[in-house]
Length: 289
Image (cartoon, rainbow, N blue to C red; front, top):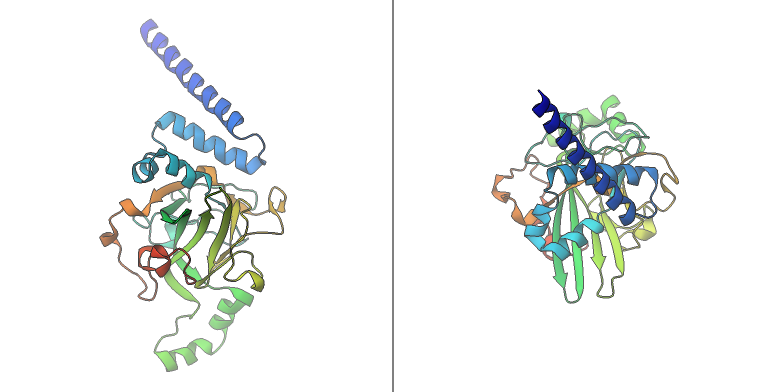
């Protein structure tokens, strides 16, 4: 009994030491953060300290220096109220039920209610002295809710008209397999610019003037309710005027696209292409998403 207590004490001391080192590293690495970022960073670093295996996939794919670059430039996600899905690994989840999280404006979430980690797929490429980091988000479906169009369709005769014209009552703003993304461009001098996907194109801010444009990063990509179209928020950020549910970057799982078995992917919607079949996968300046 005495030996067991002694062993337990040693293990407890070791665990406390690991947690102390993790917190110390966090405080030295992040001099000024809001409460959400601190929570996400703390959760990520403590998990890494216990498992001892964080970033292995990134290092194997890109090498240590570029793996750190890919992790450092990931933008946190902030979700418009009413949006319950989080991006997940399509190899584990293809239905809405396994991708939802509570719609809580004060929540920083890194797992769905089904226990699946918030996941982002990555691709790193070079063009001359520039590096491009693509971050791809998979949602099981997309449903445009602009101006209540989904509800209008359901409550009107439009669905029946659609069936007469196309043979289906399916709301045209809905599709399965929703791939959205954000891209960071890193110049030779270290300057960066970002753009995100929105309804088949790329943009920076939400306004029309930002369509097709790159702009400065704020640390966040805002996800629209239903469609998951993105933009860079310029009118506030979590903790500073924008009170919405988040997934802070520090706690998001990153998976390099180059290392996955793409033959396992089967389209659920014939009109939706995965990232590796998009023009922008090979040409990061391509205008379509």
